Length: 110
Image (cartoon, rainbow, N blue to C red; front, side):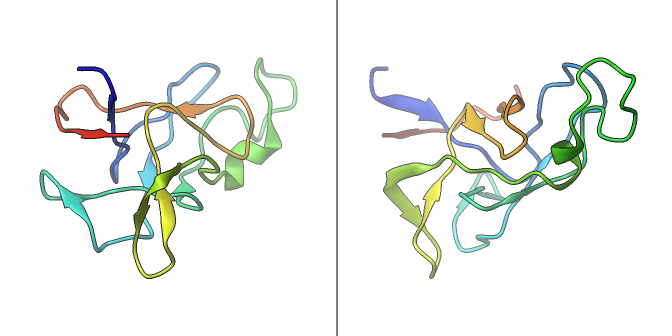
């Protein structure tokens, strides 16, 4: 399935590499896949990782207020024409990538 990549949806998880996992929160409720809104660039990610314990492995205070910063420039969504986020997408915290939940089997060409 060349050219097909998973889309990040509302509720997609961030991997719990060094602490609690976060989930993607959408800001573009105009496009739905399997009944769930897609996530886009600038979508919030709930607090995750070790953002409150500077002595814990993987400490990163940016994980408390992370947003998705990478999206496909050729697939735009919403009135703001934001790029749709694909798996994996980088967050502003730098080292956490959003990953698709295994139950979601919908793909889009990119």
